[in-house]
Length: 212
Image (tube, rainbow, N blue to C red):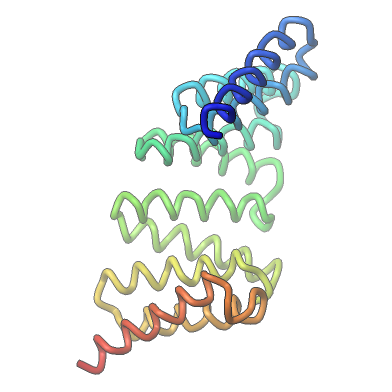
C-alpha cells in the first residue's frame, strides 16, 4: 500500500508540473500551491519551500506586495521552515506574513491572530519564553475580541500560555490557564476529545506538583 501510495503521488506531481507550462499565471498559482502542499504532506520540505516561493513570486506579480495571497504564501513558507526546525527562517516569514496581514486586514482579524499565534509557537519551540508569551497573549486578545470564549483557537492560546507558565514554575498560573483551555475544549469538543483529555491531565499533573 505504501509503495502504491508513493507511486500515485509521484504521478500526480508529474501531471501537475506538466500542466504548469500551459497555464497563465492566475491558473499556475493554485497548481503551485497543490504541488507545495503535496510535498509538505510527504515531508519533502525543500521541494515544498521551492514551490511555495514560486507561488509567492507569482502572487506579488499578480496582486502586488500588499495582498492577502502574498501573506498566505509567507505563512505557508514559515510553517514549512518550522517543520524543518529552521526557526530563524520560520520567524522571518511569519513576521512578513504578519506585517502584510496587519496592513491589508487590520489588527483585529482572524488571519492576523493566526500570524501572532504562529510566531508564539515558533518562539515556544525555540524556548524563547518571553517572546512566546508576548505573541500568544496578542493572539489570545484578538481571538477573544472576535469569538469570545467559543473557539478552539482561544483554548490553544490559553494552553500555550499555560505551558510557558509551567516552564517558569508559575504553577498556579499554569493551572489557571489550562483550566480555561479545558473549559472551552470540553464545551466545544466534549469530554472524550484528545485535547480535552490532555488539558485535564495537565491540570491534574501540575496540581500534584503544587500539593507535594
